[in-house]
Length: 361
Image (cartoon, rainbow, N blue to C red; front, top):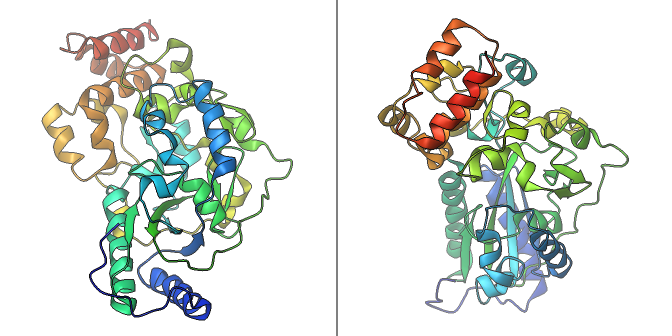
């Protein structure tokens, strides 16, 4: 929390002033480019039990950061002392109306999760949250706050649900009845007792399209995802060898997976983003696997500067594309591309290249 430099221009005990401030914050948030702003309290006791059960079963795989912070993830006031409320925001990111199903069906083309086609959303949303905090400060004086966006042990989807931004779908993504699920989340932890919003109710009903479509059956039950089977985990979070049992199912997905969102009926209401920073860079929404596989490390680092993709590194980039090339339609071009990496310095890359070449024998 930022330290108070002077008494605030508002009385936190005055409910009318707090209600007026909450209304102003929502309006300021929309003016800054957020599609929705909600306010939640800090009680995540139910979510804490679910999280602990999930961790105990080891479903987080190699994501050890999920457990190392203890209860800070489910107790916001332990993460940031003094926190009384969470301002939760969402921002649409779907960049264009290209046919994503066709992209997945084209085995020569790379499929990258839509959220990662543009610039890294972390800095963009955190910058907007800081501007929102500055706006509040200008209005009421100094107050305690801290901004987050997928950057600390925060149960952001649970908080967004409590703030009324949407409900947790069976695929564990947040769904909004007016906007689908193609959006980012961010939070401002604050020390002001603002009035809270009603949580969003569940509208998935009996639909289980996301469960049925998952290529690796990672959604093992409604609202229960085994990350160890999830293509997003396998291609982004995991740094080692991709289990052979999942390689064919990965198809041409080289960074993340959107299948569960593609089939969700609520996404017929999704709005395209107008944020320039979320627009596809370097033709990543329609680029061939071979072209990306030919990037050397210097090219990868240069092209992926400012992108969330950069953090997986060139080695895992090649690992992922090798698997996708193994799943591509056999051609001389595909085989020749793979053969250029058979002597790569990385054992991880060599092993996945060898597997890919075996698929074309």
